[in-house]
Length: 186
Image (tube, rainbow, N blue to C red; front, top):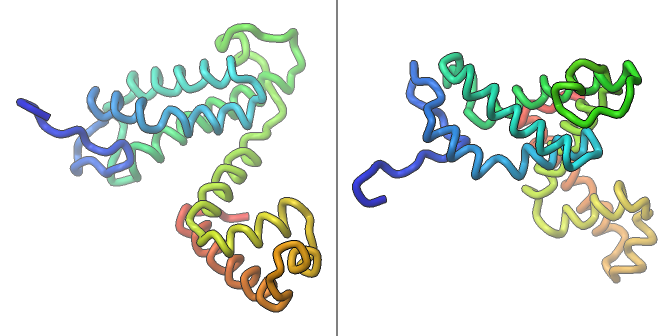
């Protein structure tokens, strides 16, 4: 960038003792907003509420930016943690079963069924699947998400059933490793 410092990636660690600065949060808004929005949409089932949740996530991050501790994790992790707490509040609000809310502040006062853990797990599995090679990913998706047997998949793809089973085994091992890297414990 001419005349300025290059932006830091939103998921990088800041220097020890630093807090989340305006530029870091602005960069994070641009780079992480789609992921935060997807998680909120999966959890809430509403694009409108998801957008309000992401806005509130960044508003809370801005208000408490001095509390960000890069020794505890990345800015990305901190933002997802803030959003997760918001989603839990929203889940509790909806669980109370009050009238349909139109504003995020109304929703925060009503509990909702807590689908947050399921949404976070789905997001983590989706991210981990993207890290796998295409052959292993295809086998896992076809067998676990589309309900095909290894025999059916072998017939459809023309790949020997033994190869399908081998890819399934090694794909699951790789998936487990990827999930452990992000701290998934189910």
